[in-house]
Amino acid sequence: MRSGFVRVTRRYNHGEKTVAYLGKGQTYGMAELHHNTTLDSAQFRDHHLNYQHTLYAVGYVDILAIPTPTVESIVIPKLDSLDIQALETELSGLKPDDRWDTKEDGAMMEFLLDQRAINGTAAMFIDLNRCTQCDDCIRACATTHDNNPRFIRQGPKQDGIQLTHACMHCVDPLCMIGCPTGAIQRNTVGKQVVINEYTCIGCSTCADNCPYENIQMVELRDRNGDFQPGTRLDAELGMVRVSPTEAPLLKATKCDLCETLSTGPSCVNACPHDALVRADMTDPEVIFNWIDRK
Amino acid sequence: MGFALITIAVWVWSNIGMAPTAIYTGTSLLGITVFLALFNLRKKLPFLPLLKASTWMQFHIYIGLFSVLVFLLHIGFHVRSGTLEITLAILFALVAISGVFGLFLTRSLPKTMNQSGEAVSYEQIPRRRKEIYDKVQALVEGAEESCESSTLPEFYLEHLNLYLKTRPSVIHSFGPKKRRYSHRLENELQARMRYLSEDEILIAKEITEWISAKENLDFQDASHRLLKGWLFIHIPLTWGLILLGTVHGILALLYGGSS
Image (cartoon, rainbow over all chains, first blue to last red; front, side):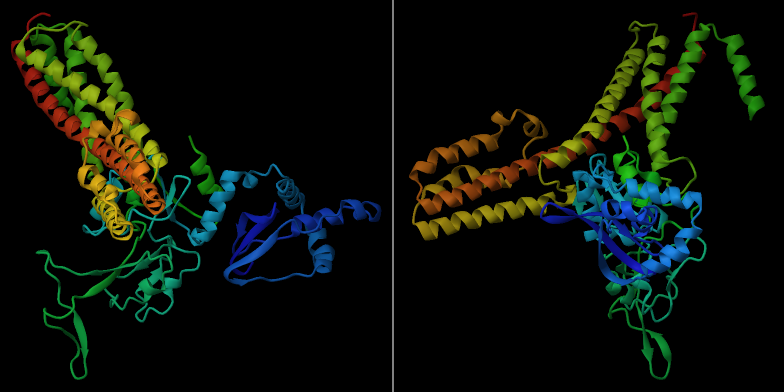
């Protein structure tokens, strides 16, 4: 996989069940190919494995297809024992008792893919079986961001887990495409997608691009709560302030994962019931282990 | 600072005639109560590196339970005389009971709310209540026009109109299902089915579903109010306890005799 995501499915009665997803840098098919190379010609007829899954593109996908003879003659002979052990483990995972085949996890996997949560490196999930809706997470967010909370405690739900409307800091952020001033960018240290409020001109391009509606345009107000006047481009004078009666100045706001705090996201730290998590979806085990926790 | 504390401790030790146990347990109890109350303050300072709120919550629960034991040791397992002491004991008991009650609520209600039907956030409840009211009203008006019958409109005016508008008490929503007003409404509507045409029966069934939706909404509303409301008892009482406990401590140090 060079970029994008694919849905990995298995035949299940008259339909197909999503069992996993693959993203950038991941491969598919090696376990079956390796298994087949271990068989001699007599065994091959009865015991060879076809590909066990079907792949479906989730939006834009760039896949590099390597011919089977190339893999068999060049790649497989150079595998070390650890690689082979990993492939054998993967193959054993294809057995019917594989955990992804259970009813509950299957539904959750479908949900994550349908909502495109897989694109997130810090997707916000709330365990509704623990959340008392005390709003401590929102208050903490507001306290950290000049009384301007950066997420909405709502979102689609599945099996008591809510995918909350907060920036997921996508692997492939569409919001970064087309910003005229480069105000939205990825932090070179923490990899968060952040907006520079001083260079943001409030054009809404990023908010319009975000397919998750996780970027909000807010009207700037002064300390008295009055709208701050905006600016406009004058042919002779350049950028000038408009009169206060015209449209207020807009700025794009979104979760920045509290990048300035050493303690990490305030929302997670503020939850007294351990009901909130920011999950890196490049490894689905993170969120499944969190859901399964006692 | 440390020297000052040691000096005060030595002074207390040599000048107070109270039993050491009373001093130890009393100061521990006041210290524990202040520490437990700091949890609320910590939540207002989320940006400080002071451990996660969930960790504080665990401390809060276990130390809170431990404080009951310290309290019992402090009073010597029997009720003391004196207005201040009795008031303090009652305050402590109320804080402890409200805390345990809050723990029970926060551990059980979210799951129940989530599994009982449509989970509605607190802010959305008024909008949802109006939505249900408007839907039922439209159904009844439609039935009156299309079926030319007064059975459903009469039922609406007699029972439904007020029920759909009002917000029942918290206790009502947690009572046995058979004693809830919604259950009586459904029975009442069922009893009137014999006067309805086939088209009206379909509408009546739809109204029954909306009554169930309203019942669930009332439950969600009551649960939200409980989840938020218990803190309005627990927190003010805690500050009252700290205040009176401090007064009690000062008086005990100034005038305390041998216990």
